[in-house]
Length: 383
Image (spheres, rainbow, N blue to C red):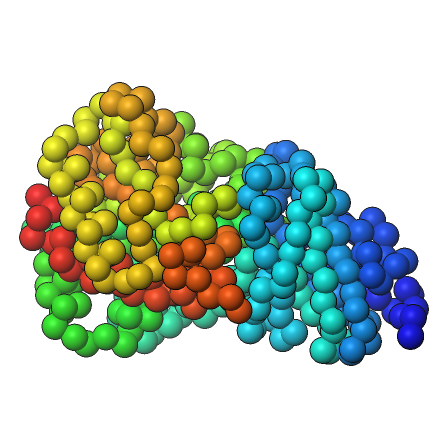
C-alpha cells in the first residue's frame, strides 16, 4: 500500500523543536535539514513530530545537512531517539554516509516524535522548580533573566550559615545538551526523597546551589550551542555582559555574593560514548591540592556507579594553557576550588550500554543522585 504524501505532516513549531522540511513526497525518503542556531552557524540538535502515518507502513527520514553540522564526526555510531507519546523514548537504528543521517521506522501509531536526545521541556522545567521549592525544601534564592526575559532560577538547599561549604551545580549552558537538566532532576529528586545519613551529613556541612537550566532561550528555540544572542555561554566566563550573556553574568554575580567551594558544570558530549569529567589542570593557579581532589572525586564516583569511568575523555591541557573562557576553568581559578565539567553522551555509555535507550534521561537523573554521594564523601577534604 502506498501512503499518500499529502497525509504526512512534519512539524517542529513547539518547545525545543528544530527541523526544516525539504521534501516529504516519498514516505520512504523524507528529506529534512537541521536549522542553525539563531545568530550562529552551529547546528546539530533536532526535534520534530511526524503526523499522518499509517500503522504498519515503513517510513524513512534523511537529515540531509548532517555532514555539515558542528560535530559531524559524532554521527558515526549514533542512533536517533523516537517516541510515540513524547514521554517514553527509544533508539532508532541510524546510519551516516558522510553527508546525511538516515533512520527508518515501521510505524506502530499515526504519529511519532524524533529527537537528537530525549528532550527536557520548559513545562517540565517549571514543574521541577515547583517541586524543588514545595516538596524538596529548596529556597528560590534568586532569579536571573535570559536575553529574551525567561527566568533563570537559582535554588539553594541549606541556610547559608557561616562556615558551611558552598557546592554549585549548573546545567545546560549548551541548550541542546538536554541530558544536563535530566541530571539536575535527579539531584533534586534525591534531595526530595532521601532522608539517609549520608545526605544528612552532607547538608549539615554544606549548602547546595543549583541552576537547573542556564540557557532557557536556546533550549526553547531548539539550539545546539548558543543563547538567543548567538553567544556560546561556556565561552563567556571572561567577558560576560548583561546584554550578550546575561545568563552567565547573573550566575557570576551570585557566586561573588555567596562563594564557591566546589563547582560542577553538567554537559553532554556529541562524540565520546562515555561519561567522564574534565578539570582545570591547565589553569595558572592549579595546585597539587586540586589535583588530589579531582582524583578523589573520580575514584569515588567510579566506585559509586558503573555509569562513570576515567579512561576516556578529553585530552588534558598543558600547564598554563587552559581556555579561561570556560566555566570550569574560570570558576576553579577564581575560587581556588575543585571545579569540573561533567560530560554525558548523546550516544551510549559504552562501558555499560543499553541497546533500547542508549544514554537516556533516566540514566542522567540517576547519575545526578550518585554525584551527591561523591559530594558527601569529599566534604571533609574540600578546604
